[in-house]
Length: 327
Ligand code: F6P
Image (tube, rainbow, N blue to C red; front, side, top):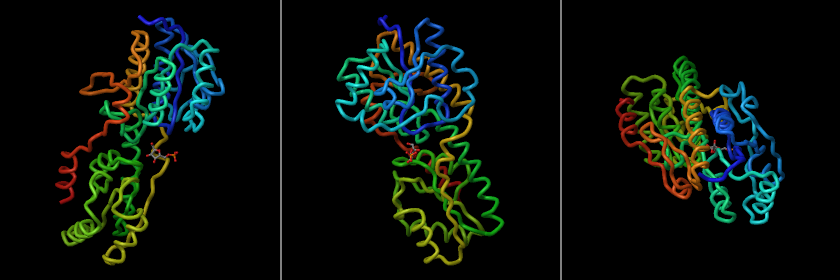
């Protein structure tokens, strides 16, 4: 067992639903195991400034159901510098914090890994991002909730699309990956799903839309991942389709940050609770520089450098299903 008496916990980077449930789990696991727990506000920025607050089991009541993060979050440029990280280390030392749990995505984990290498400071990561773009886990916290939010929004768009016989391009988040687009697209019955992993070109999109029109479909939904490169952007794609296929009246809907908010789904709450327990236990077992993930419904630990460098794979079977469903 490692000699860890005080654990810091913080959220970093873009928020995601389920982060609060993970904070609650880390704090309560510490309380359960008689380890002190400190909330670090504003991610690495707060670490540099020493924005810390001692937390107990009651500090995290009534948050399991809340979106966002009670500890706030930020993307911090200063932590990218050696001087910034040294300031953060000094603050942690002064507060007697022996280890930390970082809840975030790629950038947050990179910072934790470098920090661990520089100061030998024990760190464990919990993947929190709606994009699901972290290797070493089938699900990141917030992904399931975001999917439900997107599907609900598209169901509504479908109503108006169908009333007007319109074609809608709906942009969903996913800077580099198409997991939200693909899964929500299948869940919402989209006609076409455009993702960065598969650029099939604008001509094929046009052909597919023409085919579906002639097969009797009067309205359609095309989901476009933010990072997709089929068009320069979703508005340019709309113009291209309008110019080449005037039969369709086209509208664009960019769902944006509403996808990052809202009460976490039950799946995300349970996953967050499990991951928080495992993260604290791992630190107390003397483990470090690892990320907690879930695979085949079992919690696993993956070295952080693998989690950030490994690429998540798009589900080919789901692509096939979506093609068959849009017949
Ligand atoms: O990483 C999650 C994410 O939601 C991306 O899908 C999106 O591109 C980005 O964050 C938006 O970040 P910000 O809130 O800083 O604009």
